[in-house]
Image 1 (cartoon, helix red, strand yellow):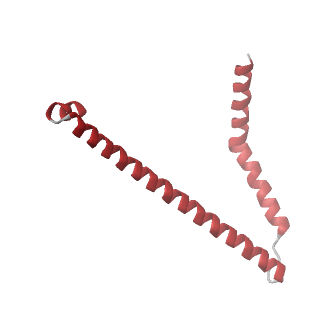
Image 2 (tube, rainbow, N blue to C red):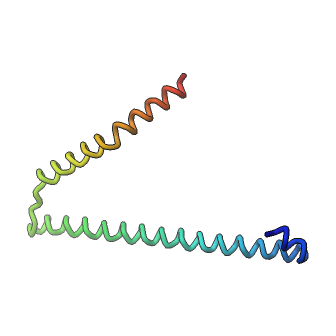
Image 3 (cartoon, rainbow, N blue to C red):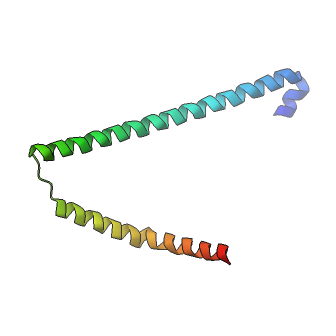
Length: 102
C-alpha cells in the first residue's frame, strides 16, 4: 500500500496519511480502553453498593444470612475449581520450575 502511494504521491503526503491512520487507530484503542475502564468501574460501584446494602440489612436486623450455608457453598465451589483447574495449573507450574532449575 505504501509503495503504491509513494510512487504516485509526494513523500510528505504519504507520511501524513500514515500519521492520520496511526492517530485514528490510537484514538480507537484509547476509546475502547476508556470504555472498558468505565464498565469495570461501574461494575465495581454496583458491587460495592450491593455489599454495603447487604451489610446495612444485616446491621438493621432485617436479614439474617445463612452464614454456614454460604461458607459451605463457597468451600464446595473452591474445591470444585481446584479439582477442575487448580491441580493442573499447580502441576504445570512445578514442572516449569523444575525445568528452569535444571
